[in-house]
Image (tube, rainbow, N blue to C red; front, side, top):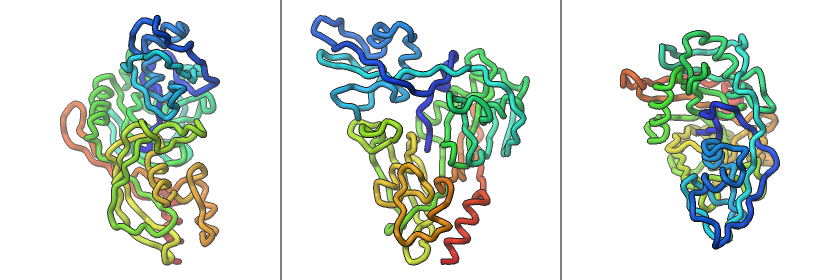
Length: 332
């Protein structure tokens, strides 16, 4: 999934990144311990559970190998120096806001929402209001029993602000736990529609490349050694204009931050409209060259209902802007 590395389960605050902290070098005299324990003892302003979440969200790096993805249970070794990019705390009590929602399904345990492009999923330092969470709080009202004792929707997965499409949201701890298990076990079905630059030669293919923070630009993701396993299956649907662009669908086996965007760019077919990973060909028509967002839509989501064990599947058609892009590309 084009998921975001996040701290959704932290009950104290939601985070964005700020300046890094650096640990002292681990010496032969340093007691042997897990990384999360070492960091919590080094930086006592953070609890061990917060530290665990930061490690899992790629906020901790080993200076000698900045591309390595770390785990909370890694054992520290002499010579290790770690960089922690600490969070800026944002209130965990966002206000309900009356923002229209396209709800595909709702019951006592969950909602399935078709998110428009431009809507941020969770409040953060740059987006304290106007998010999907604010909208869900207003919509659900007292139907939320909450997550971890706090009346808030359980964001099980995210899609980027400028990606449109389907999300499932838990209303209670039970649903949140069961849905999270399905994501961890890769039993969730996720299919994205995408428009990419160039002629995609193969009718079907798979891209395998571990993803982590770019060692060059921490705001970007990249295929890196020791990153998190990432697998994207794709199918070519149509080629436009003799090869100027292609329509593909991507089936996610894993869900890493910016996975489809990074993987498609890595094989020379970056997404139309992608401001971060895109490379625009000289022959690009203006309507595609200036498309205002990455042309990516989470059009299908399938999962097992956490309480009834019924298999559910949801589809959302292309939003108007991507349908217009398809129509214009088809006319080339």
